[in-house]
Image 1 (cartoon, rainbow, N blue to C red):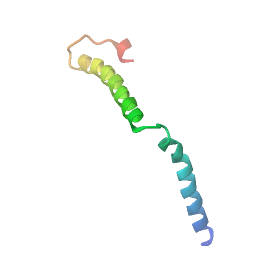
Image 2 (image 1 turned 30 degrees about the vertical axis):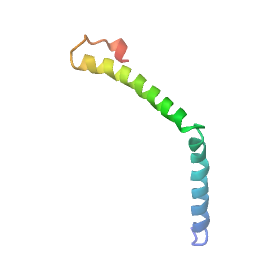
Image 3 (image 1 turned 90 degrees about the vertical axis):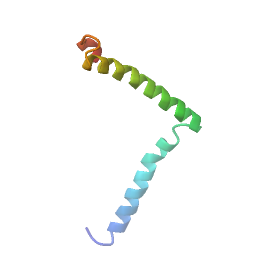
Image 4 (image 1 turned 90 degrees about the horizontal axis):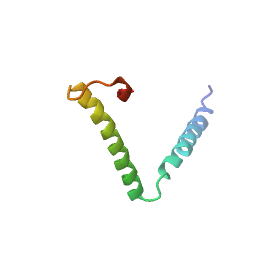
Length: 68
C-alpha cells in the first residue's frame, strides 16, 4: 500500500469501530436497568453452576441430562 492511503484506512477503521460499538452503549436507557439485568443474569448463572458444582463435589448424584 502506498503511504498516502494508510491514514485514510486508519480513519476508516476507527470510524467503523465506533459505529459498531455505538449500539452497545445505548442498550440500556438507565444505569439501573443495566444493574437489574446483570443481577438477573448472575442469579440464573448461579442456579445453573450450583447444580453442576453439587454434582462435581459428590453432594448429589450425577445427572448427565441436567448438566447438558
